Length: 401
Image (cartoon, rainbow, N blue to C red; front, side, top):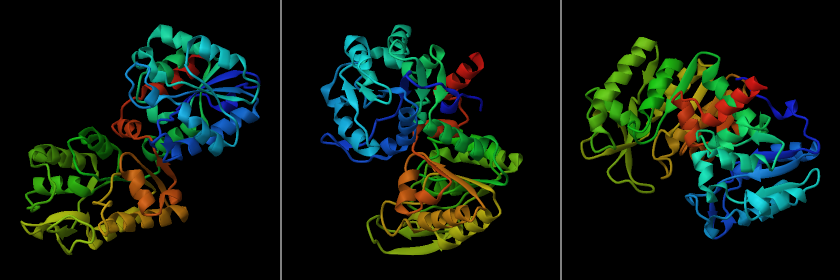
């Protein structure tokens, strides 16, 4: 991918409009997970050290273009200051006189947070007048919000068409990781797709079979594929009406030279609860009154052996109901093996999307993967092979320059 980075920009004394994603989990006005704030710190540090005037743009929640005090970004200031170790000013609007006054007071190395972008309808509609109003506040645009890159909004796509534009440290890191996973990966490539349904991931699966040498299926998704092969999955979570689509994916995978790996054994229960009694059975011997809720030990062992022959691994979705112990064992065991191969330098491992981050953290392996994406929707759309407006805008800006 061809885009400008922070290293390409003369930043001293410049007003930098930094698009961040501070749509963080919060309860009663307190941030409950600082991951996105922490990951933004390298860009903040770089801009401050370069003597830039950093003006942060972000959304929070879905105020639908209305001023909603409950979705104000003001509560974030203390959390940002604590995580970044610097003072952060706040402006009660993101355009207009209040924003202009706050920007005018900035000195080199200072940081300013503007109010919720989505308080204005022009943000989501990418209204040219709103884009111009935002652009008037800065000299340079930096996008460090890959997690919002799948939206063609004013602050993700519009600004890059007006101002000199670059990717922030987090955006650059994310794009390089994704390129290593599917863009220009070292082969063989293994993709792991788990979760409850295939109906929401048809585009993902159809794209992965074109890119991967192995496609490992887990969770309820695996049950749907086993059902499509004529296997009785008992009372397991299964989309019986998706059998034809599953068979089509299997046929296309065979034509593409992608081997689909399904569970050969699974953990079954009569009732889904913490520490429920369970059995391990062959996948074609699931009792009619029981449900499969995790991959069995032989299945996990098969995947680990296949992974040892691979150079690149992409993981989206758990193998089972990892939220309920001990039915996180399959996911945990595989995650530990992938982490070990990564630490040994034998595997490039990228995980992300939905519950995947939580599953890797539950396994205690998140820090040992090559890269963990917290991007959610943008990560999934990238898995589908879609062009992301926020990324396309940076590439277009680079070409224009």
